[in-house]
Length: 125
Image (cartoon, rainbow, N blue to C red; front, top):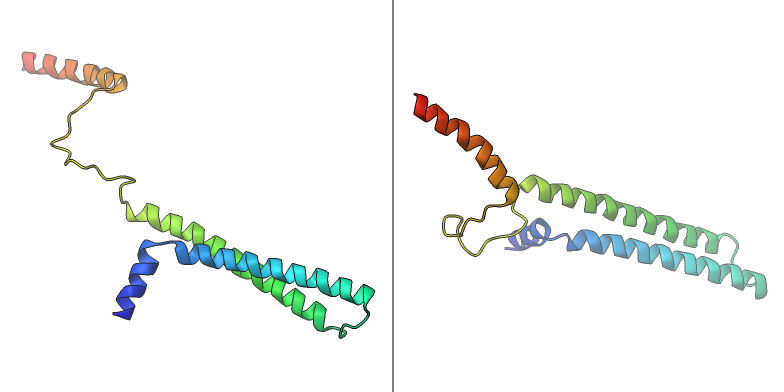
């Protein structure tokens, strides 16, 4: 049942991919804020541990950017997947045979061109 639930979440929704992108951007932003905080603390209070702050902030920024770009690639893959499935963009309430037909001007021109030779061919043959 858990496998079916996970299939339902991942097969019909791009929400997990968008969540990964948003979390990645959030982590990168927090890393940048932490870097600004530690630089300010080092300049004014002089009580930072050497190497720790720069290592932690750079890991947060780079890890967040990696997660964000992985989510971005996933977003492109999700859109390609939607196109490949070939599902219609919208669903009609009525079946096609019950819908009234409307002729557009372009369709009327096309029908006029294609119907005339067929009528001539039927009269001759």
